[in-house]
Length: 365
Ligand SMILES: Cc1cc2nc3c(=O)[nH]c(=O)nc-3n(C[C@H](O)[C@H](O)[C@H](O)COP(=O)(O)O)c2cc1C
Image (cartoon, rainbow, N blue to C red; front, side):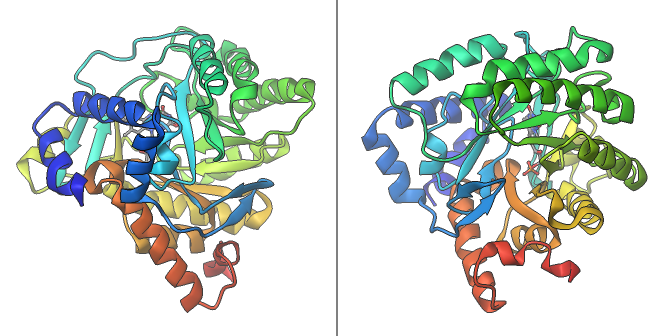
């Protein structure tokens, strides 16, 4: 309520990326004191709806998607906003500024964002230094943490395998699971890494690092919604052969329709990836496709347009073991998290499941 009444209207008056930065730095300040964390908790705490995926326990299935906390600067704030897990990044091996600004746009009437950030981040080594500080000052959250890894812009696809696996190596002790992002539309050529040969190289190189570490942390692959169904299944098969543990479906889309509203029409003319409500249909299709081919063998994280109990439930019964959101946090505020989890608890009961895990993929049975 406080966000919708005050936060969103105020933030709506300023540029999207600046609003995002202000929101994030406020969170980063609040997470540093127990008073701040307790204040957030009193407003936004979610009930529990426990699940176990990849051998990891989650208080409930909903996490904050990649790209919101790019530098992991507010990691401990996310559980206070009700999320059960968080994915920081995208992180690249080398620091980079990303594309020129403006590069993030809101289409309010469509509940959609367009971004062409281009992996702006301080690079894997600097992020690791911050995470070392965070651990040593007791600000490491008790909830599962995922790291999103992208390819450095200055590195070609032929060198990508080493770029990904070096970042994995650097961040290994600072994440419980890793998402290999070969699907952002904002790094030229990146999506070609979803093709069989490149993909096998990237995954094999990451597996070598994992084998050397001697502990099995899950590696997940994040797909683009813009691949054909046929290509998606080919990539998924390659990934399974290369021992992938899970899929994330999906990243943002470059496809567009023409909105009726003129503000949205001008935003939709911007290049970049579209997220939010218009993405929901295709993300759901991809989750259905992957689940109908692989069943529960490879758990899926469903992301794209989740902003309500119904959209979250649809993702889960279509095959998502875990779910994430980004855009709904911008349009609905943090209360959307507890609202979704409360609603999912009711759905589990109404459908006579004994836990949320039983609901996963139940549409296909
Ligand atoms: C501004 C912005 C930055 C993003 N950055 C990343 C990123 O670095 N890595 C990634 O895998 N996905 C990134 N995403 C995609 C989200 O993680 C998510 O897949 C997508 O927004 C769909 O979810 P939503 O409809 O709930 O927003 C970004 C999205 C937005 C809006």
